[in-house]
Image 1 (cartoon, rainbow, N blue to C red):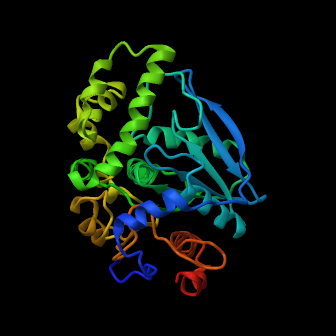
Image 2 (image 1 turned 180 degrees about the vertical axis):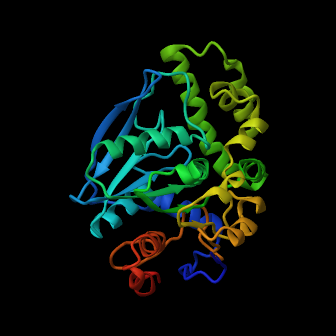
Length: 332
């Protein structure tokens, strides 16, 4: 499928900067009209995962995977759930371990290649026996995870899973970590590290993390440091490089067998050049890679009477097709 460089997204006045696009929704967007129903499922390692449903009685389900240190309450998740609800689609926003508001019980947390976790969510949804079509959507870390799952499954993917859309995907995790190590990105790094380091301490206080060195918390200055000292040992990777290599979706995109739309803004402050898989998209007919000139990281700010973001309307136009007109009418 094509590589789209002339995207329909046009940033509002004063919002063309990637950092502004990234920070504005994080700081100021409020999404109402979402009333989740929480379901807790048990995992094979005696832990739990919290799922939040927003239902309209549909036979179609959108499964949403949030980004690093996000949750089902992240504005981009709630905005997408609300939009698809209004179009007659149920939404399931799952919370990665430690992200639901309650610390999990196993020593592990979550990571960018956690496709087995997504598989367990999908398997649970299938047991409900009420959905004829399932769509997968991911944002940032959840975008990489979603694409990796689709690539890992390949031909074995459940036929009820029809389409996927992912936003701001760090397809090459090493590349993204390198970009976020630059001094200009320090505001993002500090925000992530504050909560991630706090969670390590909280889990240690709760269950004890004997196989990691907690004193290394004071030495963490980058994602590479955190992934070396904590992500890798907690999730059975040899080191940070092993994690980046095995968890990055870039290595399995060629195996994706359903239509997927990848939207990575050209001015995304989190993504390195390796995160724009143009060659793979040109070779795999199932991949549509859209590269708007602006949008930031999970930004795509829009101002309209319905309070929808362009990302929501673009996703529904790809997944449901019938909603194409919305993109043209309301993306300003």
